[in-house]
Image (cartoon, rainbow, N blue to C red; front, side, top):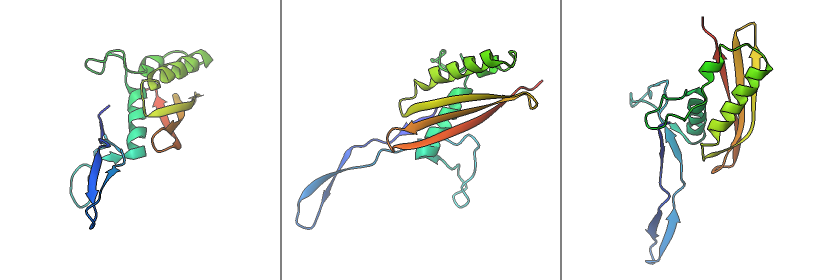
Length: 150
C-alpha cells in the first residue's frame, strides 16, 4: 500500500495589520493509480486523491496475499487460496473473516459491512465492502469481482 499522507502542520499567515494567525492545512491522502492512466496535459501518471486513494488502498489490501509484501508477511487476506475451495457458505464466511481481519489494520476507515456473494455460473465471487472514511466522514463502498481462472 503506497500511501502518502500530507502533514497538517500549521502555517503562519499575516494580514496587512501585521497580526499573525495559525491556519492548519487539510490533511489529504494520495496514492499511485495502478492502472497507470496518463494525465491528458502533463503526460504524467495521474495520482489518486482523498476518497479514491482510500478506496484503492482498501482494494489493494484485500487483493494482497500473505508473504507478498516485504517485511509484512502477515499482511493480506489470502483470498486467492480460497478461490479454489468448494463454492459454499463456509468458503464465503472464511472470505468475509479474512477481509475483516485485514481491514482492521487500515486506520483511515471504519468497516460497516462485508458481503461475499457466490456467482457459480461465472466461477466468481462478488465482494462488497461498506465503510466510512474517518477524516472526511464519507460513507462509501468498494466492490471487487474475484474470478477463478482454470
